[in-house]
Amino acid sequence: QVQLVESGGGLVQAGGSLRLSCAASGSIFRINAMGWYRQAPGKQRELVAVITSGGTTDFIDSVKGRFTLSRDNAKNTVYLQMNSLKPEDTAVYYCNVRHTRRALGPEFNYWGQGTQVTVSS
Image 1 (cartoon, helix red, strand yellow):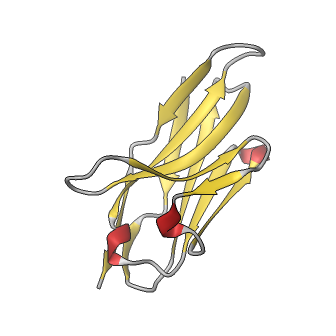
Image 2 (cartoon, helix red, strand yellow; image 1 turned 90 degrees about the vertical axis):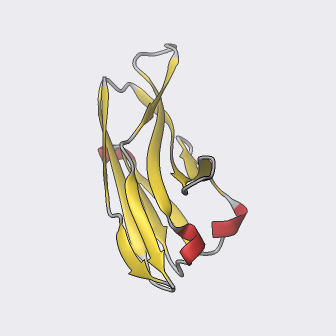
């Protein structure tokens, strides 16, 4: 089993900043990718940002230039720094981890419980 502990959500005014963190622990041999998704009311869940084991990052177009993603491999933790927040960034943010439990083993996909980010105008 894998445990994901998310933190950092909250209420902020437009233009403000928040930092989300997600720490993974448990039966992890190798983390292939860690990232954040979000889901706003009435909308589908969408990928916000992802970082691979090699450090490559990718972002949804709407957050490019405003959000950054970093990873502490020693702590199996990923950080999403969100700057210049907009009301349209309001959503529940979910941490996602793709990992293996052993060498050459299958990949597993885990989700955090979600953390609310609310940006007021």
